[in-house]
Image 1 (cartoon, rainbow, N blue to C red):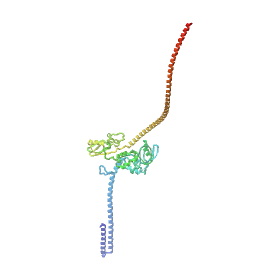
Image 2: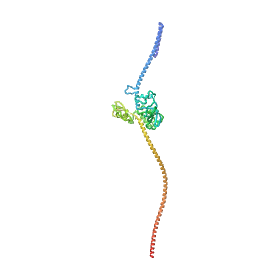
Image 3: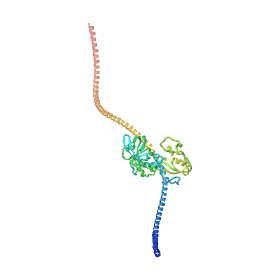
Image 4: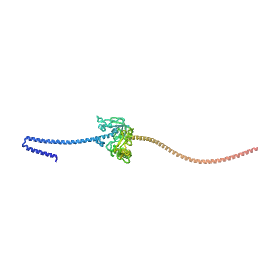
Length: 493
């Protein structure tokens, strides 16, 4: 039986008892007294009703106020946690707005300004006109507030009296890194193609005119002329970092490196994906030493230098750290040595970690595989330089090949001429050989005739000699006879 029903029964009994008492008292009371009693009784009932209602309302709202106050206290505590973290912790382990702002400041520290969703407005030779969409004040103010007063991008500020930022704030003679952005399978729009480093020659309110600093390759030319996707312009080449991919699974990483866009073999792509997926995971025995980092726990107090050259300024360098992990770049220098206490845990490159373990300063922990970070500005410039050298070499080879082909063509022409000449000479040789054969045959006839004539001449010569001897003999006898007869004739006188 509920309290409400009991109250109703009590009220009914009270009314019945009052009526009974009033009926018995009416015999001795005057009518005015009875009327006054009735008025007082029913007024008390009405007052009791309103008092109960007031009490119930007061109790309801008090309960609600207490509940809302508790919720407000909880929300204020949660707000404090979200804004500052757990203030009772010496080392913050809870993410907060302040910690995320610091993380954002670290992320955008070297990023520079970025202009997204740009389009190619036109091209005249190497000069490209890039249309840059305006940024709304809300969208521009958000990063400015998030980054607070440290390294906020210039394009993040918006005028208080404007609904949209009317200018991109890109200056003439600036250098920009351009990427072609295409929709990814996971819904994002990551940069897919590096279009090159450009020099800004002219600017207008919503566009810039720029030209490539290095000749683009055929793939870049194709993507520059392609209407698909949009352009993203970076004031500073995006910096590679391990944490940017540590939270991604295989499907998300594969979506960032689509096979149809990369243009490499499946084996090369799998090796590259494996490098990203294994980053920060336990190392394997076959991993190269320079890719292995080891967690060590210090068992002795130890002080070590973390800057190259003892904190002295160094020349400009394309590397941030040396092989042992010491800072080379001035902006990364700590400016003092680092001291590790007993029990401190730190991650070192395997060579340094092995030295610490060998010295007995620390004990070995888990070995981690760390992906090699890439300086994309240097790599893209170096690749473009090497491709230009290769292109120049190909051009020289093509020119040499053309000259060689021309020489071959001339040689083939000469060969054809000489072949024709040889054919004619062969025909002449054949005719000459026939003439030689005829001459040889005629020579044989002449030799026979010569031999016959020689024999006849020899016989004739011998006959002539014999006849000459006979003639001399006859002439001698005739001379003797004439002399004899002369002598005789003289004697007879």
